[in-house]
Amino acid sequence: NYLKILTKINPDLETILNLAAYPIYSKIRELSLKYFVDNFYSKYSKFYKPEEIDVAYLPCSNSNSYAKHSECFINDKCKIMGFNIIRQDLRSKAGDFGVRQNPNRVELIKGLTENPPKNKNKAKEIFEYLNTQLE
Image (cartoon, rainbow, N blue to C red):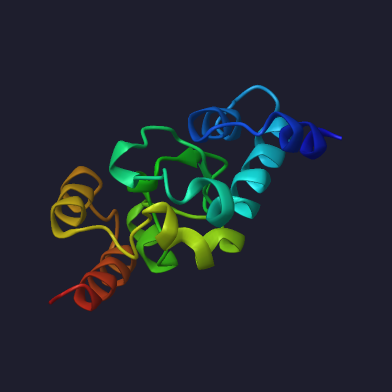
């Protein structure tokens, strides 16, 4: 069993994140992510500094892709603008991984200018979301 092997080899943070981001074998990727999440507080949290992590290991719920902590968000309402949303089962721990609730102002403006709404209904939905982001 792969999880038993991981327990025996006790991978460091860099190794487990690279395995969780490994694009070829989805089973290895998923089990490595599970091991990382299950052992985050006991093995990895003291070494995990989001600003130093440059690995796309977090699965996104609104696409079949993986993202870095800075490229996905917790609030599923921002997907209206095309932003990646962290997978539902990881949302309770997302803050620990450095995932923010919403994109910042610069990211929102960039998203709006690079991908403007195509019709009135889409524009209404986007601006309703943006209205919730006013400080």
